[in-house]
Structure formats: structure tokens, C-alpha cells
Amino acid sequence: MNIGIVCYASVGGSGIVATELAKSLAVRGHAVHVLSTDTPFRLGSFQPGLTFHRVRTPAYPLFREPQYVIALANRMVQVAREQGLDIIHAHYAVPHATAAYLAKQILLRPGKGPVPRIITTLHGTDITLVGSDHSYAETVAFSIDGSDGVTAVSESLRQETYTSLSIQKPITVIPNFLDCDIYQRIQAAPLRARYCPSGCEKLVIHVSNFRPVKRVPAVVQIFASIASRVRARLLLVGDGPDLGAALDEAKALDVAHLVDALGEQDQIIPLLSIADLFLLPSSQESFGLAALEAMACEVPVVASRVGGLHEVIEHGVTGFLRDPSDLEGMADDGVLVLTDSDLHARVASAGRRSVRKRFCRDLIVPQYEQFYEEVLANSSE
Image 1 (cartoon, helix red, strand yellow):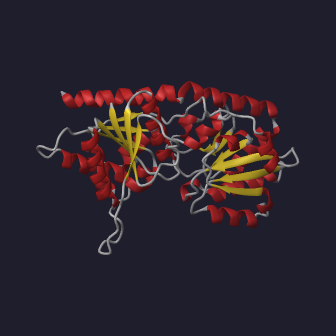
Image 2 (cartoon, rainbow, N blue to C red):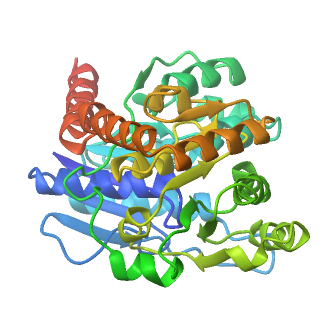
Image 3 (cartoon, rainbow, N blue to C red):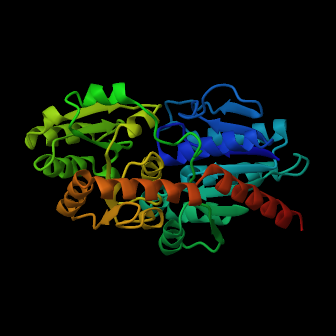
């Protein structure tokens, strides 16, 4: 198949999954064209069958902001015509589903050539925070209903979409995935020694884009409670609007000397491989890709019981889930798993097994291929 994939280039679950899907489809022999404003974070080096098409958004003084939707739709039309796309796969409903719908209407004009089928994948905050906003809801719902096929990354998100938006389109759940041959714990003793010089501290880690939904100040609060009982350090990996607030919280709780802010990192596996515990006290997670990455690297996860996280983590078996307001309970779980080596080993091993059994690339990518084929077949009837 000839497939166009539209995604955001910034660090975040939707862009990571879309890029990994594009790379995996290219490996499996498809011609894949990635459309984004910048080179996606995980695209990497040259790969046969994979082409990047930049979306350039001009800014005009008359307009209040760059017209991204118009420029993106125009670029979709250009690539669809030049490359003969069978599928345009839009990741993130706002505004990619709308741009894809506009592109399809342009291509439907008589004499304009074959029209690709539009598939929209819903990833989370595009529905739970943005798409459900009254300023966008009608347009987002219309654009999703106008897609030829729709997927969501969890059953929780599928149900939330039907609750939040008035849509009729069937939604198929296809979960996020990892390359399990790459995502596994590695030996990184020198790196651990850098952040744990005495050799006996525990390393706690948080990885995100530091948006408010991730509640990074709460990460610091949980860590401070853990550190009062266990010798530990905290690694904050990523950047975003709440990093400053998190560091201020660390100062207020007198744990700033135990916190290392590492910024955005494209090589996350070595950092996960030196960690003993992953904290994810988010207010909302449609799936929890960061938790999945940690589990694959045998790092027990303590997280909020929100959204799709319960579909990824089995409490007490592959990780720990608490009510988002129960920060002390999260700290208690953290202390328990950090001080009981047998429990830590069981949870780490069970988490890894769960990922390999349910969320590996070779299990999930064929589901997308089958979905593409079904959409194409239904459209030709």
C-alpha cells in the first residue's frame, strides 16, 4: 500500500507512535510518506520506503496565527496526487482529522485523480481536553465522522469519545506498541554511577512532555515522601511548561539536591535501564505509552488509575495504580517496591512479560494493516 501518515513532530505519545508505525510499515514493504511541520522526533536516519514531506505554514500579518490547517490540507493534496496515496492516516484529531477531511473534499473534485481513504487515530488529549471544548467540538465530531475509518488507542478513549462528542462512526481499538527487541533493559552501570555515585541510592524516574496533565509537581511531592524513607534520587526527563513549577516544588520540599532535570532525551532506554521506579501521577492518560516503555525495560510503575492505564497495568501484578488524589498511597507503593527486592523483581518481570505478550510491534502493526485493507475494501464496494 501507499500510505500517508500525518502527525505532530514534537515529543509526545501521538507523534512517537505515528512515527514508529510509519517506520514499521516501511520495513514491511509499504511506501510510507510522513507529513509534518518538522522532522518527527523518532524518525531517525534514512530508511528505504520512508519519505518525509515538510508542511510549510506561511504567516500573514492579516491573520492572528499561522494557517496550519489550510497549509496541511494543501500539502496532503499535493502528496496524494504526486504519490498516488491509498491511505491518509491522520494521528491526533485536532486539527489533523479536519485537515484530512478538507484535503479529501478537494481531491473529490471531478478530474482530480484517485482519492485516498482517510483514517483518523485518536490518541487522547485531542479528545479529552481539546476536542471536547465547545469551541471545537462540532468541527472535530464532523471531521471524525467524515473519516473512512477511525481508531483509538484504548477502550477507555473509545468510550470517552462517544461520551464527549456526538459522533456515529464506529471506532476500532488498536493499542499503542513498542519494538520489544529494542525496548528492553540494558547494562548501563557507568550511567547509573553518574546519578547514583554512592552505589546504594534508588533511582526514581519520570518521563513526559511536562504539560499540566502530567502533574509533574505531584511527581516531586511523591518523591519527597519516598525520599524521607528511602535513600533515593529523582530523574526528570523531558521539558515543558511545568518543569519550572516542579523544580520550585523540589526547593520548597527541600529535595532539590536530590533531583536531576535532564531535559529532552531521544535515547530513553539507557535512562530507563538505570531506574528502579517510574512515577506517572497524571490527571488523564488515554493509554500511557511512557508506562509501557518503563515496563518493557523492567521498571515498576506507580501511576494514577485514570483513562486507559488500567488496560496497561494490572494493579499489584505488573505495576501499581492509585486514585489521582492519593499521592501518599503512591509514595507508599513506591517505598514498598523499592524496599522489597523480591516484590520488585516479580513486578518488573511481570511487566516485561505483559508488554511482550500484548503490545509488541509485530502484534499491533498487522492490526493496522488489516484495518487499512478493510477500509479500502469497504470503500470500493
